Amino acid sequence: MPEKVLVFSRFPKALMLRIGERFELMDAAGKPPNQMFSADHLAGVRAMITAGGTPLSSEMMDMMPKLGAIVCYGTGYDGVDLQAANTRKIMVGHSPGANAASVADIAVTLMLAATRRLLVADNYVRSGDWAAAKPSPMMRPQPGMPGRKVGIYGMGEIGRKIAARVAAFEAEVGYFSRSQRDVPYRYFPNLAALADWCGVLMIAVRAGAGTHHVVNADILKKLGEDGCIVNIARGSVIDQGALAKALTDNTIAAAGLDVYEKEPHAPDALTALPNVVLSPHIGGHTLESHTAMQDCVIANLTAFFAGNPLPYPVKEA
Amino acid sequence: MPEKVLVFSRFPKALMLRIGERFELMDAAGKPPNQMFSADHLAGVRAMITAGGTPLSSEMMDMMPKLGAIVCYGTGYDGVDLQAANTRKIMVGHSPGANAASVADIAVTLMLAATRRLLVADNYVRSGDWAAAKPSPMMRPQPGMPGRKVGIYGMGEIGRKIAARVAAFEAEVGYFSRSQRDVPYRYFPNLAALADWCGVLMIAVRAGAGTHHVVNADILKKLGEDGCIVNIARGSVIDQGALAKALTDNTIAAAGLDVYEKEPHAPDALTALPNVVLSPHIGGHTLESHTAMQDCVIANLTAFFAGNPLPYPVKEA
Image (cartoon, rainbow over all chains, first blue to last red; front, side, top):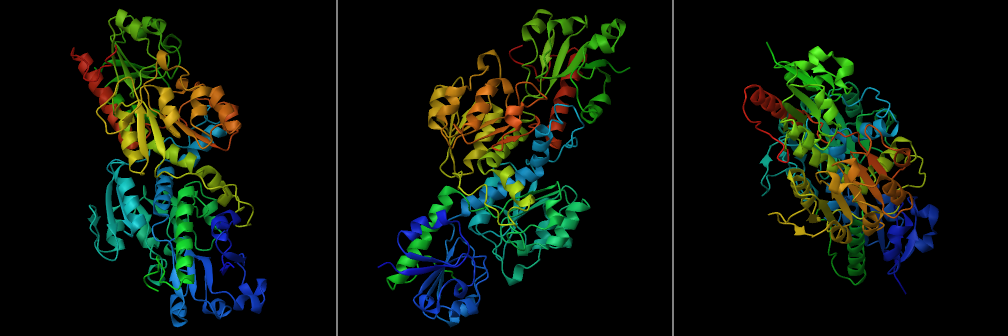
């Protein structure tokens, strides 16, 4: 009989198909598990799958007294109360790097679309304004990529892949991360120094308490009036109000965002702006990326039920 | 006294500022020169500036009996009747490579935006449908870049820069051009073989009589149902009707277009589709690219009026 696994976050069913062939999935669909299942049912649950960004508190864990493994679908695990898991001897696993290329690709997609004003361009053609010879909303040429200074905040697997892609556009690449890495890019000792240097800032840092709103009005101002910011990490890293203001009063030129402070929700102050490109947290949403993340989830669950250490453990856990 | 130069195509005034500091510009703004200027005025014109894609016939040339130089702003010169220019001993110059990085960048921008369905994604967030938990229009994950086969048609300066960028996305790169080049990518001896192999086709060929509608329904079908086509060269290379049909009946998945058969005009059959990304021929439209193109125009005109050969001549001319 297959082992029972609680699915905690709300996932499209298609993503759980392969995992469901191996395990008996109990889908809580983003609701508190005790609203969806009886205490008897929950008592049998030894493992759960969650999206790393979904808040997962000690109270939720305590609804499943036999819980021994929390398996995050994706790289992130910032929603999981790691200390609570540790206290309860619950292992925490994730899918490190499985979606790195896919996320790096969306970062570069957003950077290019924002700096080249692709949405404005498409609308100019699609509306018929171009054919009607109406004044172009993109009359003023923008800086291109060659020679542009692109700063990357965070130099983990995703940051490295962003850097490799950006360098191919003949741009200069610099970065800040907690420590200097063995990479051929210029290192800056703090975020302010990186923002002083660069015109495009790409956020690829692992989010946590120490990164909350570190990208604030001061950092944004340093990017300059041609500046552009891209965030594919977590919405909490940017002060979203300060960003909306900087984009509205042209302190910076553009932004590309895949993540938001409260998902699924992008505030009206951002969705009303023409100089932002918005995607619904789809960084990891490619065929290969999902397959790789599912491989990690299956490997983590299989090892756990066999009584072995997780092959893809969260190292801080 | 500065030399007189006719500006034949319709250019934004800002692009002619630096050139206008050196020469006396007579702006025909896209109209036949004899509608804008008297025969006396035209009799004094020895050089003209044109956009390479604008049709420039022998009749137009004959309106300026002393015309000795046609200087194209940009890389292309497909609109210029080279044989007519040659017969009249008119030199033809252009700006080779000046916009190559900028055009390659827009090609990759369109490729990424089309394959990751960026317009659909932005609309899903911006409309509030994501926040309202309405069904996602991007439920089905698309293939990502790593391992994807990307074919490049044309391996001139722009094609090379596209290839270098695409390779950084961990994709496989192949190409077809008239002859095999010294590049580290797989060569295919014809367009059909390239289209058989690849899933994403990037058109970077120099357009001419031999390339008219070579990307037809047969070539498009070879790309497959996940296929994507990007065109930053000239609209005439693609059979636009066949493309609209292939996108409508899902023969291929997506397209990104910066150029069209009749500019400034994208047909309704394309502008009505959600699976295309359209830009208004802005490939070369960056600050550095314009500066570089203006440098070439100024250098060509200065050499011509000094009685020297053009430093950036069209080699076929």
